[in-house]
Image (cartoon, rainbow, N blue to C red; front, side, top):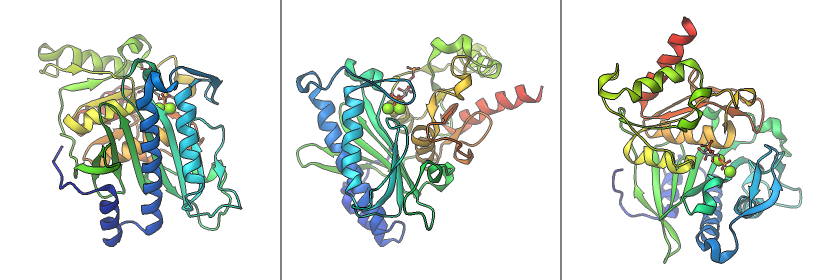
Length: 339
Ligand SMILES: O=P(O)(O)OC[C@H]1O[C@](O)(COP(=O)(O)O)[C@@H](O)[C@@H]1O
Ligand SMILES: [Mg+2]
Ligand SMILES: [Mg+2]
C-alpha cells in the first residue's frame, strides 16, 4: 500500500465533496457508518471481558446460528442509520427483509446494505472479523423502498467499504475514485488515511480458498487449483503459497495489501443455493473495492458487478483479486464450458 498524507476520514470526505465526487448526504451517510463501526470495534475489542462472545441462541433467514456479536453489530448499524437522515431504507444479512426508514424519521435518497459482522466463526477464537457495506441510490419517486428496489447490479453502487477489526481497526472505502484505507486512531477516536489509491499487483503467487471443499468443486476449479499446487513443475511454472483466514474481510484486506486471489467457488454443497457468499452485501461491495484498486472480480463466468440480482440474500461464486490470476481462473472455466 502507498503511504498517505495523514488526513482524517472527515477531511477526505470534505475534499471529495468539494471536488464534486460526492454530495453532502453521501458524505454524512459514510460518517454515520464509520461512527457505527467504531462502536462495533469497541464491542469486538472487549471480547470475553465484555460478555460479547458466544451464540445469541437465534438464527437468521439463511439458517445460520447468530453469534451475540452478529446481533450487536446489526443493532448498532440499524440504530445509527435509522436516525441518520440520509437513507430511504436498509438491508442486512441478519434481517429477512429490507426496512424502509419510518415516516416519523427524516428520510434521504440512499439505500444501505450491510454484513454487520463478517467472519462470525472467528469471533470466539480472537481472529479478525469485520463489517462490509454497500450504498445504492433509491430509485426516483420511491419513498418507501421494498426488497425489489435494492436489486440493482453492483455497477450502480455509489460507495462500498469494509472495516476490519484486527490488531488495528481499519476502514477501506471507495466512492468510485480509487480505494483508500483509514486506520482508527483509538486515542483520538478518528479514522486517519494510511493508504491512498491502493493498487493490487496484477500478478500473484498467493491464493486463498477453503481446500476442504476440494472434492465438491466443479471440474474447471479442480483443474485450476491442481495446476497451482503443481507449482514450478506444473503448467504454471511457479510455486504458489496459500492462506485462508475464513473472514472474507481479512482475506480481501491481505489481497489489497500485497496481492493475491480469493476464491469461494461453486461446490456440490452450495450448488442449490448458488454459492456460499452473498452478492448484495459481500461480493458486490468487495468487487467494487477490488476493481477500484486495479483488481478484478468474477463469478468465474461473468463480471461480478454486472450480475443482475434476483434476491436480497442471493448467493454467488466469488473469484477476486490480482487481475491476471482472476483472468486465468476464468479462462479455465471458459475452456471447460466450451468443451
Ligand atoms: O467457513 P468457510 O466455509 O471457509 O467460509 C468462510 C467464509 O464465510 C464467511 O465467514 C461468511 O460470512 P458471515 O460470517 O458474515 O456469514 C466469509 O467471511 C468467509 O470467507
Ligand atoms: Mg460475511
Ligand atoms: Mg455476517
